[in-house]
Length: 283
Image (cartoon, rainbow, N blue to C red):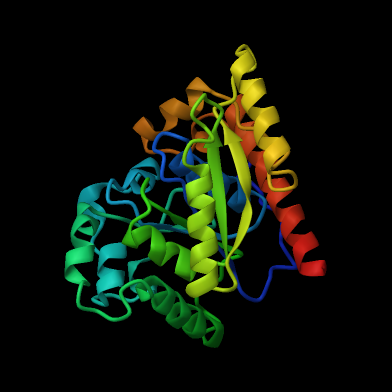
């Protein structure tokens, strides 16, 4: 049975969505894969998700089956103020999972906004307007979570995401250079928190591409947990061929093969994230 055939009713949805960005300046760590599949898994358990693709490569948009020709309004239009966030939102093949797609135009956003005093607040302003409108409009789409998929660099787009977000989720590949650059990312998060967004915190670290046959993966797992105790999710995402294949079909892994080990891990991660959020709200 597909996890999307009968999603349970969520009677305790928060009044405002939890906004988090997925960031890591190192490429190829499973950041976009996590954004797509964690969002899909949350939608499958009745937690509506909006994913804002802020990466010029637009891989999250492609991985959710949105053809480049169909991206009439994108996150670039939102940042420039040529469209509202609500106007740029589109549906995906996953019930309860919506997307603001990206285009290569984002490569020029720093030039376009170079003279704008609020250039690193553009996404935060757009989100604030969207949430104010959706709260006043009972017919508007309500989300439990808003994800922002960042580019693999610490540039103005990533800063826009961190200023707009309440927390940062860090996917970390179980490879030799996994910790390289992580301290820089955490330092950037602290700087943003100190000067631009006092509410920003670290949602957690998700270990990805874990290979049980490789002793190095286990060593990275142990090292990361010893250095960042409490921040690392218990769920580990395994290296999985089906998860790697899914984007080429324009599908999340949970639609491509919901029984594979990667899909099951993302479902487990979604449950763990929800439990952490409930504990945070109760604290």
